[in-house]
Length: 316
Image (cartoon, rainbow, N blue to C red; front, side, top):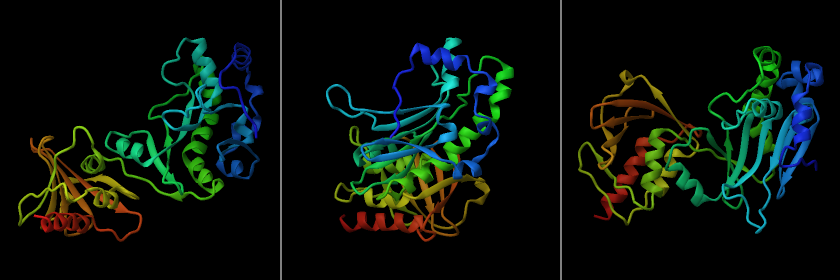
């Protein structure tokens, strides 16, 4: 196993800053993902979990393994590995631009179910759940939502643009798949992070203050009961699902089941007819329509909502 220091030294910073174009591996500037797939890898390991980095890129990257602190505690955010393009860090230092995580490509973390549930209750832009292990711990792929590529001038930006593109393609297209393949015992699992899913998660997992919600249909009024746990229904609606915004004109006719959050003045209408559609409706009249795609190709969101309503009705 190959390891690196967790802190850049002044000598390392100086040597990287002095890199000329010829110092970058020629192949790294011209090879794309298909060649990288056949290349040798450098293995980083944390508690038996492996991250493989293409050897052709390894010397250009800073791969951090998060170790226990002096008291023996793991990273409080569950981070295992973080990968950054080293030259961007150095050039940012030289320009005193160090606040936006220059060169950062991705971080992989592992959290327990309780931590995941609380995360799902908030905005998760740049955080993708992609796997689960046998102990019900979830792996999250954190990635930037803006560009972190830094060079001292435009010429060097243009010179290294293809390398930066290749690194990002590897990070976004290959890392999760290879991580899954190289760590046995994981199962693929992901969670949608749309606005709909965030509210669904709050109905199931919010603690203090507990979110108020009701479920109703076109025919029957709103119901709620502490005796019926929302979590099983919410899991069916947000696990291995994708909520994609579509044209509001695609809104189907007919009946629907309503999940309402009166304090937030927002509701979600899960339509019975047509494909899986849900409409987000605000009290001011603003509406958004989503089409839901479930990985199993079978789940019907309105049926899940109807079962939820039926369970509430049964305990009245």
